[in-house]
Image 1 (spheres, helix red, strand yellow):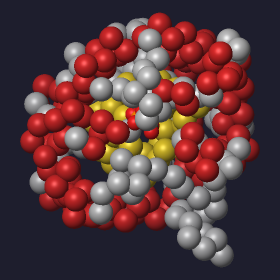
Image 2: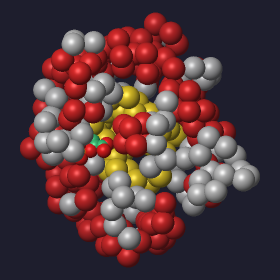
Image 3: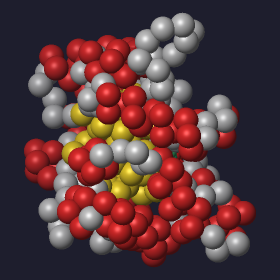
Length: 256
Ligand code: PEP
């Protein structure tokens, strides 16, 4: 079915202070035609320190952009110095939060159990997780990408209600394609995204499997977005580097 609304999300990573963030949001909004905003859900994911400013810019000008954070604590509150809770993000008007990004898994040793706990914390705060999965180069070269990613999907979604799985956005991001300029071919993206959907259908039923939006991420640019988005089980993109340039990101959002 083609009823899934495409979702293009820009992961700004550790870039832009709050003033630069306002400028990018305004420039982006000016570059997005009405038609695109009617068809595609566009989301920005600034650093924590820019969320309040991004909220003000979006609400103040009634911009049709969603926003969210790049990480969340697994805990609701308390003695966790340096962490940010889901409740704090929800209070700032965030609707999305990235969980399990490969950079968190790699540099902060986040494992599947922590990712699962963070996804549950997101739902407890009424945030929608953008749940990232993906294989490294060695696993891809050994041809084990599908089994690796499905194990991550199973572990991350463990213990969730069907309604929660249905709402989750899954981002398939092959680690070897992130920030490297090496995009997976549309067929590579479809292979894994199709396998994820089949697994969701098997475990949670066809209604859930058909509803979940699955993004591809890894060196997506305006020039390769259309071919990737044309794949039947790819419903959007999680964009890193190219999301920092308003024209390039708007070009990705106008893929259709
Ligand atoms: C990402 O960080 O989620 C990502 C896909 O990065 P890039 O687009 O820069 O490869």
